[in-house]
Amino acid sequence: MITSKQRATLRKLGHDLDTIYQIGKGGFGEEMLKGIDAALDARELIKLRTLDNCDYSSKEAANIIAEELHADVVSVVGSRFVLYRQSSKEKNRKIIL
Image 1 (tube, helix red, strand yellow):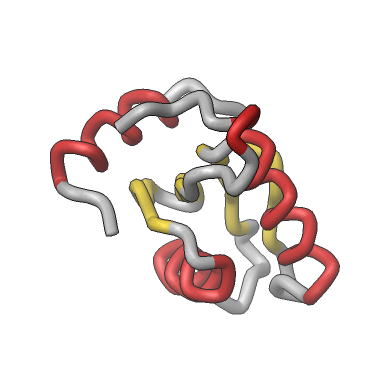
Image 2 (spheres, helix red, strand yellow):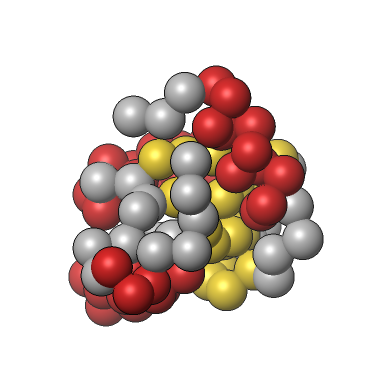
């Protein structure tokens, strides 16, 4: 669990990130979750987006994915959301909280 101060720092870092995953009508399956998991391990902080035809709101999708992958929801703004999880690989740890 991250503190509100850490969340503010991560929100600032996540602002300029490019969206790397889009969640559409099909939702998110096991393959997409594996990809998101790998991205979190490599980058620690990632931005995702729900498309208009998605069955979930951005907040719902963010919470479900975060729970599945043991990550933290940093922010949800409109259709985009940012997730954080400290990398399990020491060499990939770039964010110090």
